Length: 319
Image 1 (tube, rainbow, N blue to C red):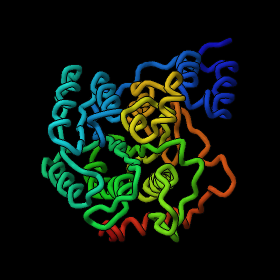
Image 2 (cartoon, helix red, strand yellow; image 1 turned 30 degrees about the vertical axis):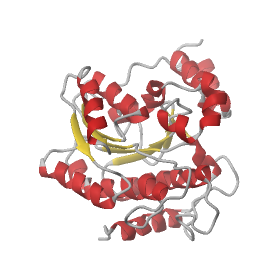
Image 3 (cartoon, one colour; image 1 turned 30 degrees about the horizontal axis):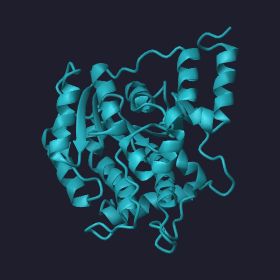
């Protein structure tokens, strides 16, 4: 038996989960898609906000959701690029997509975008925190934060907190944190949250923030009504990977997933119920996966609580 739910299909999935190159690459995606008998993801009738929506995984997610009948709210940093992406999504959508302009590295910009959405007085069913950066050199934002930490951690945290009233008014609401397999190599340092005490290493800082996203997703799920989870899209060929990791992109190019394959689980989670995809879990290829693979990377419940409270203090959202 090799059909969906068969012992062989399940064994293949578990075997891939134990690997890195096959499991994270297009090989893992194609084997799972075929043996597990996936239907196209759909979030029909749901309103889904996607950050970093003008390119890469964010754009692919927006297209997939729109094709599946969702109303997509695209959050983009650049208005011109965002409008071009919005029109591309509109060409395949049954419901007209919306554009919100926001720079996730700027708390002021996030507040402005959230206020705009809340001013429309509409429920939000799903928030996909996808926007992320990995600058080659250390950069400080105008508000004084390290750029990767600001964009990947503080921006998504603040947006989630500010949109909570809209999410709580939504139908079976959900928050999806788009993390990375890089987080497996990192334990989050509460003593040095922006890694200022170390020589700047882009991949190390990126992995550090991606571990933080998983921790925050768990804490959001514990504290608030919306189902909150994190996920890993696998190794996908995106403009961000090409520019931030050119050597990796060149060597691994033949087996990198397409942006659409990387976006599949994001779109699937957007349409899944809390029963189909419970919160507090880390997903890859539509199934929960381990959050820890290396010794010394496991945090405690107190660590997650402390990180949440630190982000609340830094973003001025303490209750």
